[in-house]
Length: 411
Figure 1: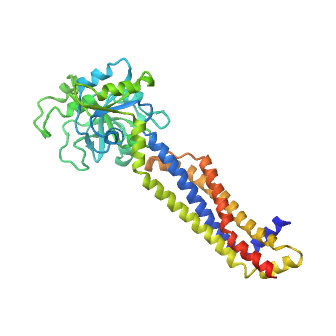
Figure 2: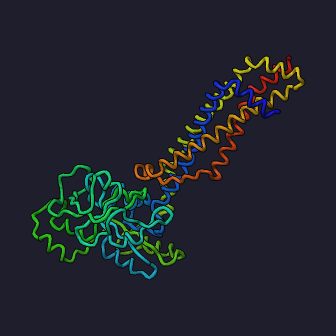
């Protein structure tokens, strides 16, 4: 009886109720969507690099080291000597090491020199391995593996030739055009800075700089074939990542590196540095949440205003209910239940639309924004938010409900 009466009342005012429901649905979609994407972005950010116990660079700030070694942003204050790298990685606690050499670019994308161990040991997300969309890892000096976005935006295919540039500016006139590289692999999308990176061997980095002195190109005295056969052991690298045999010894290895006597070095825990970096950009996270809350609050006010404005139209309905014996509290609960029903239906529709949106846009968000968004957003936070939405709608509906209660009392 009560439920049928609520549905009939809402159906009689279907135009205004539908508008209120649309506004509430949009607010639920925005609030749940922003919260879910915010949480997933934070998780994706924190998992940009995983399975790495320590990142080592020259002595600088931990965030600066993280930015240039993982995110390819900024520049190191100095390089690490190759002898120090070999000395530290020969420690029995070290399971594997990934050297990183930065400083060159290609059409605005960073070039990273490394070894084949990078493709074996580097992990991202929840310890996902690097996989190839096409091709294989580099094996020769003048071979390059492209990140997904590099190949997509520049239109490169396997066996294409490209020329690296000296420095990291988007437009450079200092080109290594005498020693082009051949594309042998294209990585699958990861949603991390890997997608924006070109990967070459450390020997390749050394080879293209054999005819450079203090940043100035001189006449090349060594042929390409001779370079391929030469011993091109690097003199220095930018940074390196370490995987240890046991995490119990992580702090001992970190302490050893930070007090290394041959040159000033810094070893950081990537998880700790990522948390510090996220705290710095936390204001943006809170701003997004505030905007979505304001959108929801405006929708609640809209529902309240709609119910309140309908009181004049419902005077006869209220009088009829009073005639048949309905007490004023019945009118109060009737209007509250109407608001609750509008909110419940809006939550169901908004959640369904959000699920469809996340499912359709999942690959688009990964390839274009680097966001790995899980389609399932029904987390503990989402349930709490839905509960708060229901409670807020009941509270806001108190105004029109009390107005109806007074009208019923006066009849």
